[in-house]
Each structure stands twice: as structure tokens, then as C-alpha cells.
Length: 144
Ligand SMILES: [Fe+2]
Ligand SMILES: [Fe+2]
Figure 1 (cartoon, helix red, strand yellow):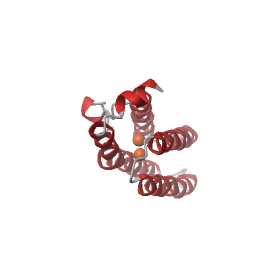
Figure 2 (cartoon, helix red, strand yellow; figure 1 turned 90 degrees about the horizontal axis):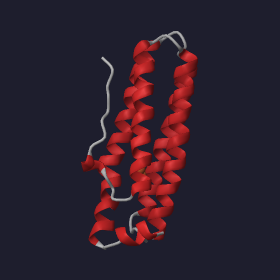
Figure 3 (cartoon, helix red, strand yellow; figure 1 turned 90 degrees about the vertical axis):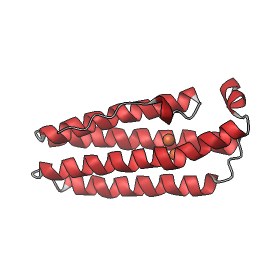
């Protein structure tokens, strides 16, 4: 059964550019999960995984720039967490390369990608959402 992630307003960080990247990320992960479930096209799965990775890289650096501009106190920990996720994606990519004939592994990898990105959103990104909100920084960010 393919997992279909649906965006919820509870996940909004209050910054449209970032929310839109998070929504794109969900779309990418839904596609990844659907192709993993179909189990038929290793090259396409690999390509979609690369898309998720590239998208996450760009998103993380945009987010870090926002957190630096707003002097978010836990920027360093947040940055380390982003780096940890990207490292885990690199090791997943190696696993995918060696699993052309084992589509059951694609399903577990797609699941791990989704778990790690959603956990990050809920646990880490929500933390800076409250920081921006509590310090009245949202208008300032929106005006940039
Ligand atoms: Fe983040
Ligand atoms: Fe994020």
C-alpha cells in the first residue's frame, strides 16, 4: 500500500517560500513511494531519489540562510541535523545502487526517507516556527 502524504496547515512555518518547498518535498516523496511500490523501474526510482536529495539540499541551505538572518539560537544544531540527514541519504543512495533486483528494499528506503523528513519537519522545523512567531519575526521575513 502506497503512502500518500497530504500537506496540513499544522505544518506551516509561516514563511510562504519555505512552506512551498515543504509541499514540493511531500510531492517528491509521494512519487518516490509510488514508484517504489510499483517495483518495476529501478532507473526511475534512482532518478526520483536523486530529485528528493537535490531538493532537500537546496531546501536545507535556504532554511539555514533564513535561520541565520533571524539569529535563530539553535542554528548550529539545526545545521548539523540537516547534514546528518544528507549523509544518511548518501548511504541510502549506495544501497539503492546495489538493489536493482530487490524492489522490496526500495520500499523500505522510500519509507525511511519519508520518516526522516517528516520527523525533521515536526520536531526541528516547528521549533523555529515558534521562535519566529514568539519574536514577531514573521513580518520581517515576509518583507524581505
Ligand atoms: Fe530544517
Ligand atoms: Fe524544512
